[in-house]
Length: 97
Image 1 (spheres, rainbow, N blue to C red):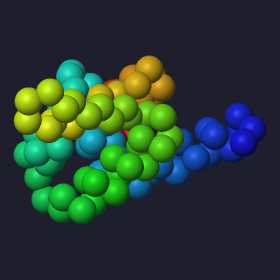
Image 2: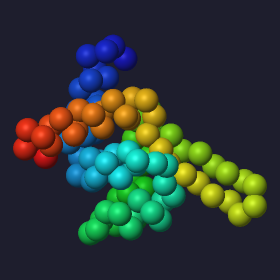
Image 3: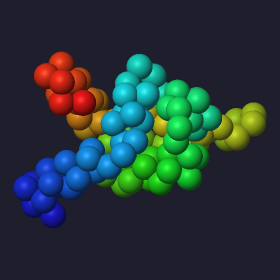
Image 4: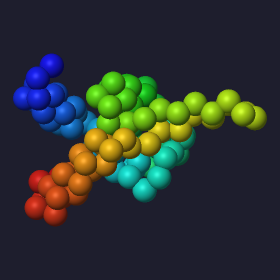
């Protein structure tokens, strides 16, 4: 995939409902699914799961599985995800979001 197509795919993903909320939720620290769900009102768990998979496949979110003790899965922004976050916050400052 060329660079232009990647940019289009990122824009299309960001335009999808709940994507921005999930990225903003993950900015400060990695979170478990239940913590992401609690931080975003009025969204179904199925939708959060779908968006997280899309963000992970786009390399914007990292999913880590911890097997020591009780199984735990955490999500965090990758470097690309952090870069997208800065674009989102800039757009917010211009009243786009």
